[in-house]
Length: 244
Ligand code: OAD
Image (cartoon, rainbow, N blue to C red):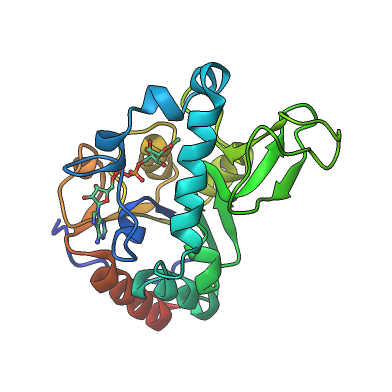
């Protein structure tokens, strides 16, 4: 079987998984690889519950800086984000977008049926009640929570290492039912997202990886389109819009 020519059949249930690579062309750095975020900042210092307990100010500053960058005006959705939103509109079957990204570029581009499995940078959560609120660009331990009225309860609504991703029941149900699974711009290093391709395969789905590089999981995909998301996602939109 060739790994490039996806057959032109009628799909019913599509699940797309995105990772940091889809936002790379918007100017947001990826996590791994040369110059990646985790090369500049140790995961253990800013992205674990232990880090937040040990040094909350450092963790607040890290996420404040990321929010500042996201809202600064320079970062906008790119062709790939828009192509996925258009695909969702054009496709006549069921379409779901699962993202590991905490940025809001998919929703800014117009995606609707969207699951932020690793949380959202522009939201904050009360550690006591679990209530989720829209986040301002800057907040820290001095801010009072809207529900419990106490300072020091608000944390970024992002999933840290060692925590359970969000929406997993919904996502597993979608995967069990999908006939096409597409992973875009993710290195396949972090579970459970890295295991979605196997669940989709077990469901009998066709699987496609879009990434300029080979990844550790590439061999699990039936089809591989090598190239930047801005090139390959419009190609996917055109193919699926024609088929469905
Ligand atoms: P990574 O940084 O691990 O991988 C980014 C992927 O994007 C790589 O495979 C690149 O080859 C690819 N890539 C780069 N430029 C691209 C482009 N223009 N078009 C398409 N792909 C491109 O990021 P993720 O796989 O998203 O979790 O990382 C997964 C999780 O690890 C993140 O959600 C985050 C991180 O630690 C948490 O913080 C919980």
